[in-house]
Image (cartoon, rainbow over all chains, first blue to last red; front, side, top):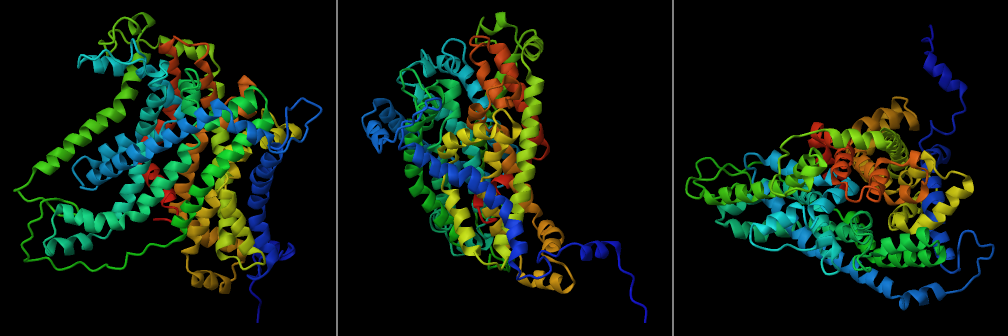
Length: 310
Length: 301
């Protein structure tokens, strides 16, 4: 009986060391698959993270020969640093504003889009448009919109007889201007996630409720809202985590000013670390940022871990 | 979804006044739909008009930009702002840098994340639990926190001002690994066992079964990663100080200094920076939105 001729591929395979790829239970093969990512993660995220904690305990300027250990002094300095307090308050305000305005409006828009009106695709594509454009471009465009003399926003306000505001150039409105623009930029992101959540609710639920005589409000209150809870939770947590990292729009639009009125944690971190080269101090700020975000991140992972079945 | 059977609604007189849940509106109550249309049309105006207005401004000569705000549409549109900023600044170089960086990030992210995600979902190897814990633990670290030591590390390696240095932070991000792992978990083991019996080894299962089945998740990860890579700002700003190596975003953002009041050219540069992503978006709008929704759901909806 003639053996079937070996294909070229099989001959090559037999010539190579197997490395355990043939055996589903061999450790080596799996290690080879997972190693590149894990090693990269270790080198780029995990070790530098530990490095941040280490550097934060030192007075660390890159060119100095001496980088003395100073314990928790950097952290003690943060406690009495007025600019850092501003940064904390501004970042907190920014996050709170996004949660209170961005999330509900995104949900509202998602509900409207879920009505399957004619033109829904154009509506959703337009609202989502700012999400795909980069923060830098959007920040530049809005800096122009906010221009007190020639900008569209003041021109629009003047139609109603308002004198308009000084937007980015005033201590009272700089942070608010950044918040408004960021909500505008980010809302489509949350809207799309809400929309996916809404689409995931089976129609039969609504049909059954309608047969039972439930009105629009009752269906929303007793079907949509409870079933949308995991999605809402996810949206809130992710919005929080991202809002704590606000940087680009501050860099482009205000540079943290006027007089630190729109400075944020990451902006102050960048200033200290890469403008002043106080890397020890900057690392302390970074560690504080980590601690602040940590709690939210744990909550986020809870929301991923749990499986939702309808 | 557990309920799949459609209830038999034939012959039932349902007086639905909305389309929530897929019902047609009856003649009785049309106003909620009109109201919804009205709100959405205002929304479209709010979200699109800034781009349109910036575009119109970029077509105006300087004299007209600062003449009156009520002349929204340029009276004599001109491309001179575009020509000037293109000639004065290395925009072509920056676009190329950004394309190389974004493509590299997407390629390596998809490659490494699918490999690792596959191993973590389907592998039976010693230390899998601890590896998974490591990936999930790393998700908690905001990338900003590692920038100081990473900056020192890159300079120590002599990688300052290289594409690799910019890309590496984004490729290392564990989010995609986690996402792909969650996705691969949903592929039944019986399929893998059948492939084993047919003679596939561990790697062939990856190329012949896992990757083809993961197409929606791959599209999602690609789009998601691309948007982030294209818009990346803080890390390139830190690690690159050579103008020729700037990604587009950094180059454009730093124009605000020299072009403080030159809004026509500044906006022309911004519009040009937005065009590549906008084109991709208009061509594959559905993929973009599904991409966000899928990665947003974290577990494939």
